Image (cartoon, rainbow, N blue to C red):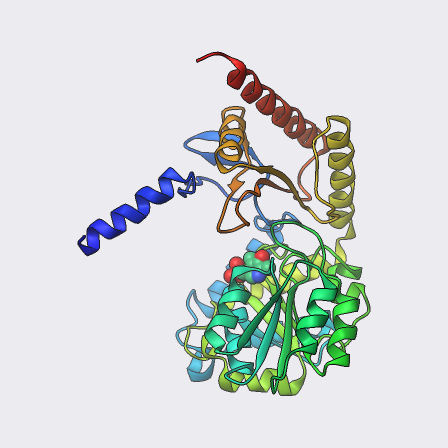
Length: 396
Ligand SMILES: *Cc1c(COP(=O)(O)O)cnc(C)c1O
């Protein structure tokens, strides 16, 4: 087979497994109601938990900063791209996380790959939950360290791995809130194990910041875990913050090590300063506007009660990520398509994003959803499931 034919065969295989992905083109700002192909959909699949991605005060901050600083940063941070807006936001993020320092990265993916591969190499070990985000897995693979994976939230399994590990440096890496399941890591147990085995802990709290903890300060702060317990905290800015980018928070030594050695920090253009300015505005709202988190809690409780009443099984999640596991790839896809016909946008999440046979409808809530929106969603899901049952009973 030629190069071209091999690629075509791989695409064909992906289609046959019901795993083919397509992008849908959005013709409006993000929000609870979005336009696609001139049709409005009620959306339950963005990570814009606090409804800040289209917030006028943040747009205004970005416009003002663009007037002053322009649209591009011009270079990487270490050449000449590190602006006052970046520097100021880093100070604010350090305060927000209760850590001595914070460092901006251009995305969460780059932060995770950069941190793990800067801190670990051959002779070291990285221990990860099986359900960790792909960027954490890629960071571990790239680092060259021994890669040990433990079963999801299985502390006994993690303990065994640590006991058998002879590596020079040991780093336990975990999602604070698991991105496809919505449940939380058992951070207190993980930190106790880390201390007993002289390991460091890195928490990727992409889905915890803005949502969990006092003033939205995240899963690590919610549990009162300090720098002694969790040495590395990662947050992303494209989810609850509604903007773009990511940060790492920790000690002076950690941050200086990353500035010197993290290749995804060094060899890439800095975020536009206006994005940093927008994020500063967003951070104020994240901290001050408790009503957004309250609304999320109200929606989550209502959704869970309503699903229980309709016998829709849910996972044990108290986050705005409320997946409905369908299992079969084709069936998850079909429910998603039937919802689309009813004006609801809820993407089916399939392997390799989730383990095989656990394809799901990953429902996510935004503070801008109403209780009526939740009712519409649950009723439409029931209808779609009933339609599928009815059509499979018909003799063909
Ligand atoms: C989204 C996500 C990332 C990646 O962040 P980006 O800024 O989108 O690159 C990393 N980790 C987790 C757990 C995520 O959910």
